[in-house]
Length: 332
Ligand code: CP
Ligand code: NVA
Image (cartoon, rainbow, N blue to C red):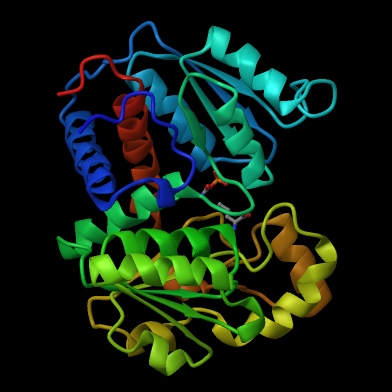
């Protein structure tokens, strides 16, 4: 398998075998990290992280993965580069690839990260756009496989805003890996039809499936993983909260829903999550709409079914696999 110099922009660009390779590599890196075995395979390499939206996990995962691999990492925070305001995306890409061996971008449209990639001759990594969040997917599937050994044939249910970047990306990765993906939420928020069609075509090859439903019982019956995400994503207007809460309140993941799934079912969430009142936005929503918990109850979030902290840790191991596979010189 040779992924040297490949961009990592969306999983539609990757074959099931390539995704499998990255997952297996991530498992090796996790083991090496736990055993204290050095893996400084990217010494002398430089990586730039370009963030137009905020982040905890993605930024830290890229930084620590880079450092563990021996690379140097520069972080450009939202608002501190010239990109977009004084310099085009094209020019930014052309400049950065003269200095760096890899470019990570988190921000708005998928078109931006694709334009960066077109104009740079070093790998570009998508750290989340409005459309896709591919590095998150590797961590999610890795976490699932840590609990069920294999992902193939497993049923993963996404509940909530099924049109968002995470839901769309899950539908793609599940299809690539021959899993049974269910989008459960109100019809208004079902995944984009064009992407559903694309995934159904992929499923003809992989024996996976995609089901869209408004019915919670149908969705969660026999499910191995129940996944949710925030009801309003970064970049959306505050004014959408009211309508979103009306539409999604009944799709909150609670213990009743978890108990209807497979007895070994796990709960997943990309994080950050509104499961209590310990955040400023959580408090504002409580004051305006009276909700103490949003997409998931505190009980589920903190239960033994919840694997969200393993999932967060796995961001780092999986991103390390992507950096090594695309930037490393001595790939076995
Ligand atoms: N899951 C995730 O991408 O988290 P951050 O927004 O903190 O990077
Ligand atoms: N859908 C969320 C994911 C955050 C990791 C957002 O885009 O804000």
